[in-house]
Length: 135
Image 1 (cartoon, rainbow, N blue to C red):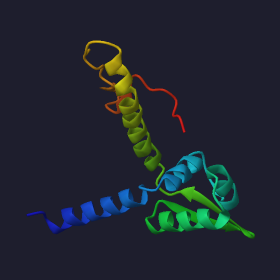
Image 2 (image 1 turned 135 degrees about the vertical axis):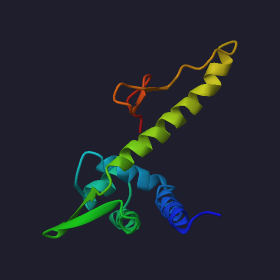
Image 3 (image 1 turned 60 degrees about the vertical axis):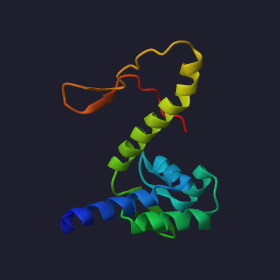
């Protein structure tokens, strides 16, 4: 049986993951990766109306991923957990590999896949075949 503390951990994990299931919210994370932006800037960046951007930001704020700061009549948002950008980058690399896989199968006989993730001397994962994120 799972300990109550561990079950709570997984519940919180699922809560954050649920927020990340919407493509517009992922676009907002990407738009906020370099710092604070106004709701209007964010709406324009992801191609939605101001009210729609505000709704998504409210959901993200409820999950503790962003916080807003009033500056006069403008509300500016920033990521409260910048590491979420790194988590999204991991998923981006998985998607890129999966999209490339059918092309690799058409190219000829199976060849062992290169080790995409290697451990650097700092003991953190490094993508040795990293390409700039395509968004």
